[in-house]
Image 1 (cartoon, rainbow, N blue to C red):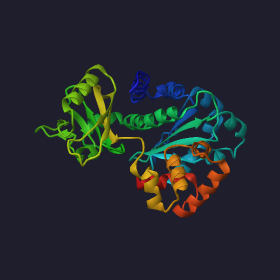
Image 2: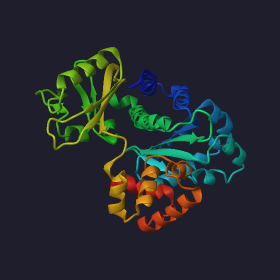
Image 3: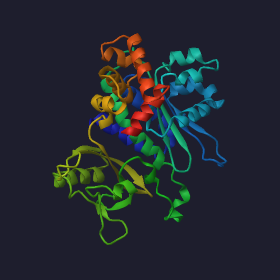
Image 4: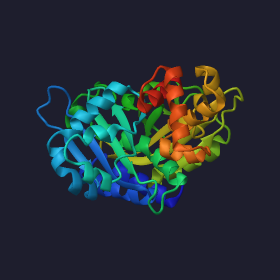
Length: 358
């Protein structure tokens, strides 16, 4: 993990307690990824709540789209994304076209909103958070490496916002539902001594075990099932004591089990310093995004499968076509064939389908 990425992760988790810092954090993310012209975070109030919808955006996006945000325009867009499905990443090239039904076309064009990636996350209480990163593929500084960095930051932003939802009265209701349960994979909050403050169901059920029972209420972080356990424990211990991030690949002692990617980032829990430890599949692409798996699973041709794999991993049709050595017209033709074979009608539906299969 680079120092720049560590610094941004620190900022992301500081926003758990200080959501007003999101505009500056989003600006830093845009600067580090080199291609995003602006970002928007939307918090839809829970059903029946007296509070309205709140927004956080980079300064540039906020200035340009304030009128449209205040008019509730993006709230209707959240409804569209909600109907797509529960996939963590939703890519829809024509999403901004719905926005542009109002007289904002020129503004949206200036911001590069016509080629956009949106991340949708639904929390158990019904709130939704939509993170949008407006791509400018032709702008100076654009790179595919930047897209990868951005994708690696997305889950952490979802986690930070979810943790930041904790009700201030939750201290008086320790038996309330766990917010870590809203996170998509195994997640454990630990203290400097590796004692577990809280773990979600995915972490408790994980194999090799992540939590070791100690006879008390909390348990301790368990690393016995992984190779180089002492080295990993030392890295996590340093991170917990000095508030640093950790990004490691874990290899299980059982060769039949897949590698995992462990990420640990500093945050706080009920006023105490804590480390949020999460596990994700190692590698950037889930197995079902492998072109061969897509060919077998959906009956696609090799070129159709290659195009689907790129779209599912965050590329737009505009980016994917030259990457595969084909014209945009040819890519559109392949996409139509893919829609027919997968019984989908939009790119967002296709990506949601592939994500579910993953």
